[in-house]
Amino acid sequence: MKSKPIRISFMLVFLFILINANPNHLINEVKNNDLNLKSFKIALQTSEVGEDVNVTLHQSYLSTATIELVNFTESNTVILPCPTEVTFNSSYTEFLIEDIYAPNKTLIIEDEEIQVNKHELLIFPRYASFQVKGSCYLENVSVLISEDSTGDQDFFLDVYNATLSDGYVKYNTSIAPTSKTLYNINHSTMGWEDITNWHFQLNIENTYNNTFFIKVWCQSSQQGYWHYGSNGVYDSVIWRDFGSFPELTSNDLGLKLDFIILDNTPTPSEINLRINNTIVNDNDDENQGSWVSTKKYTNPSGNIEFELSADWWDVACNITRAQVNYTKTDLKANTNYEIPEPDLVIWNASINEIIDSFDARINVYNYIQFTISSNWSAIKAFNGSIEILDIFSGPAINSYRDVSIFGAGNGADWYLTAVIDNRIPGNGGEAIPFGNYFLLFTTVAILSLIYFMKRKKV
Image 1 (spheres, helix red, strand yellow):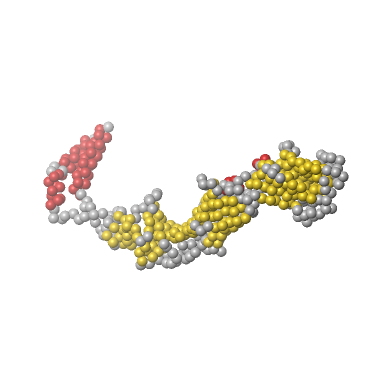
Image 2 (cartoon, one colour):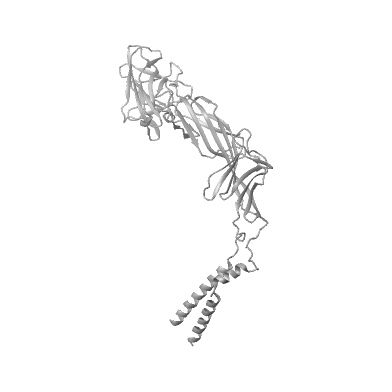
């Protein structure tokens, strides 16, 4: 039974050998055959729809005109134009701030003068709070005081840091105060008494909520008084030293203070300069800074407000450069292609809607950006029948590239055209080498039979 398959195998091998006994002759016959094998080359006249591609609208506001901001304590606002369409939002904002100036400050806690409104100081000293915007020098202090007319009286002034105690802002006795003395006060009628050139540094890092206290007291046999106002507006926390149980009162004591800032031409960080409550960074050049944000800002009113604030009084500065880039990323372009020749594909990417989002007030660097395949070449841009020559093709990134049409604006019929080598299978122009494939087939068949015979022997 085993000999029959073997005989069949030998017959087949012999047959293939006979067929290929003169392969060169066979190939020549094929080459000279009048049939002339046709090239597998078919010109497909076709048009098809491709995938949509992303489209982004860009519009930039840029101003180098100086915007002057003066005397802002809490905040000041800069208003810049923006597109009214809320999806056309900011993607990059930058300000350059120069000429920062922070003046010295006089803070009036209470200047109302009422003779009969007075607190005794001999037994019960008083503490009046004040709050600063940032670290500075306490230069001058004025207090509204009087004393009994029987003789001279010395008044003592102590400056304390603040602390939070049982929910109340209070003078901090754990840190020794700094002191000054008003000597030989001798007037029963209230009057302003001054300590000048104190030049004591107030460090907000060492106190609670930028707050400090001034204590006024006396210790001779004569009574001293600190006068207070009665306008009902309280700008200070007042404590009466009542032994172990200090008492909180609600009158503003007559008090004026002069502060000198550490630097009148500070860096942004020295006064904690902020825009929209985020910090302005210091620049290498003294007295200037920059602010950059990638936060999305938009407003259907057509204006965006940027709020500047600082930790000092009456700050002034100039904005010498303002730039806002706006982008709209919810657009698509339809694509289609034609194959007019076997080795050529022509692509078209069209925005099939009217663009009306560009704002006429913002006319710097307006462009439309298509994100297309990096295989596209010979790219052209059109608005209707007009070719736009001011275009830029970016580098290929992950098989895509951005193509920007500069000077774009509102309107319809924005599109790109491009070409690409025809890579569709079946559109090649090569003839099939049939004879070679037949020889290869024969060889493979013989090897297969030999393998079959060996397996039978096993």
